[in-house]
Length: 130
Image (cartoon, one colour):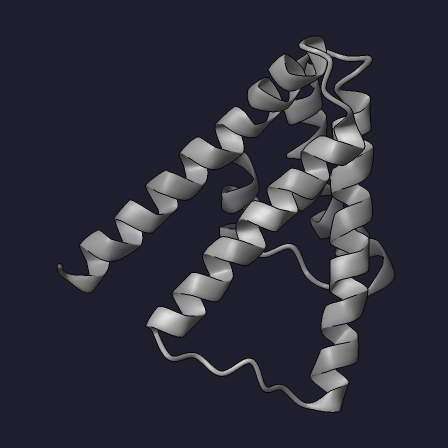
């Protein structure tokens, strides 16, 4: 498979997964699922998949100490964002949750401009709206 086609396939799968996560989570909660248990199951499935992928592709788990602690921090942040998002599905609709969650690129761009003094370039502006 051509690299370009492979990239398009990967982004399409990612798009479908991201678009359905709110709906699947809401359905699970409506059927008595606990947001914490749903999130735990999600992460267990991901670990199993990634472990198999890394084994199949012969990718090493080794990383530097600096990267290790950075990854722990990012993991902690991601777990908390995901947990809060899943908990919110008990109270709001999946469409509202999705809209709120996926406005983060715009918030990051605005905060980067205000705090880090990054410039808003035309490509960045276009990417935010299209």
